[in-house]
Amino acid sequence: MPLRHPIRWAAAFYFVLIGVAFVVDALHRSAYEWKAFYKYIFDVRVFKAAGVTLSLTAISMFIAIIWGVALAVMRRSPNPVFRQVSWFFIWVFRGTPVYVQLVFWGLLSTIYHSFFIGIPDIHFGHFYLGIHIPISQTASLYWLAIIGLSLNEAAYMAEIVRAGLLSVDEGQEEAATSLGMSWWTTMRFIVIPQAMRIIIPPTGNEIISMLKTTSLVTAVPLITDLYARTRNISDEIYNPIPLLMVACAWYLFFTTVLMFIQYFVEKRFARGHSVLRVSHE
Amino acid sequence: MSESLMVSAVDIHKSFGTNEVLKGITLEVKRGEVMCLVGPSGSGKSTFLRCINHLERINSGRLMVDNQLIGYRESNGKLHELKPSEAAAQRVGIGMVFQKFNLFPHMTALDNVISGMIRVQKIDRATAIAEGTELLKRVGLADKLDHYPAHLSGGQQQRVAIARSLAMKPKLMLFDEPTSALDPELVGEVLDAMKELAQSGMTMIVVTHEMGFAREVADSLVFMDGGVVVESGDPQEVLRSPKHERTRTFLSKVL
Image 1 (cartoon, helix red, strand yellow):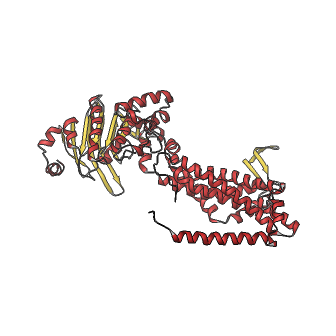
Image 2: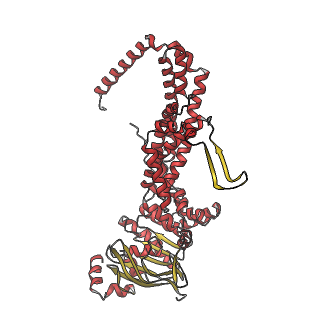
Image 3: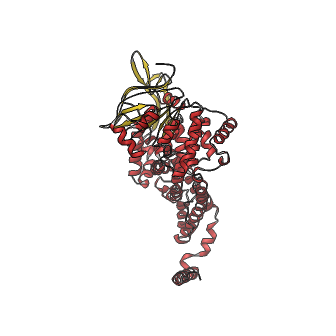
């Protein structure tokens, strides 16, 4: 006879009961305005806004991962200049709130009027040795949001990647070095692939976190993302609740898809390890 | 330096902080010679081995492998530190086998063996696979090509590691306690692979506690203690009638 679990069954029954009661109640509660929810969930404006949220997440995360790996590798570099630059960047961008950083990026054109790359004081008539990049007042808020999100996230990614690199046994680097591999070849083909197994689960977490953090871009202020757009529509119909539900539904849909992707990617990078670090309970 | 010498070490000193681990090591290894380095733990034998491969930088002395100064270039009587790429090029000719195997766990046995050929020597993949397969056959692992290290026994892993080093066609092989991490019943298969290698004429320096191997295979035996060479000579001689008290004490414990 297998062991019985009466307490488990009782607990499950109890929570299902609460859940059903909540849903039945919610379906009849007028404040939710389900009609409005159904009307707007596939509204073309909401659809577009969901696209903006998704692209903000994807592009910011893409930049953050590349820059984060670079920062983490720099921190281990034999070159002390790289180590210090990396440390300083992480110190600043991890040490201040992302909301505040986004407000700062929004004010970029107020603080700096143009970028100049080159040698400032040398010119022949109107020809300068360098290029001027004006930051117009209409600098794309979309890209400022991406810069803000990705630089902040890169600081966190750098710490995640660093932990991954530290998890790889020292002997691996020695073996690679003794084969005549350069420091970079060793990193690229020996250390980083092994670190991936440690890096991927928290990175999946960061992507999900980023998806939700995009709701702060209103600080820039960018108002085309999912949260800002649904707030905007709810102002038209004088009821914020159904559109909050719409936003939640979309966020939840995206994070669910991301969780599935994470599961399969983790499986892929567990190669060579007989025990997959995924719970089956 | 004589053409017949593979390794020449003169007065090698090495410290970690204030702890001086090597206190003036002088020794020579001829081409084709198999030398066993023995001694109690902490005697500096592993550190010396790592210096030969420039995994550790020596503080003073002259260390040459195949008539090349290790880690430095000499011009106008001054020693200039080698660039990382030059140091890496030197290591290609010197194979190293580690106590803990240090196989790359994310690669199959074959990929481990060909990793150096592909990433360092830039040999095309098909040729590398052919050579790598041949090497794994040589160490008796022809049927394990596609196995990941986690699915191989310690003895098999160490033989893959030996094949991986041989893939770089080294002129000198260094073994750092290659059987110390193995279950007793797996030691033999690794020693056999090393013996075969010795008989093929490879120059080898072996840090080991396997006195049987030293007696049977080695051309010379060096006993180190406290960062110095205490005694060296023909293995049969040294093992049968050690001249120094410290050697005698050590041998009485391990034999």
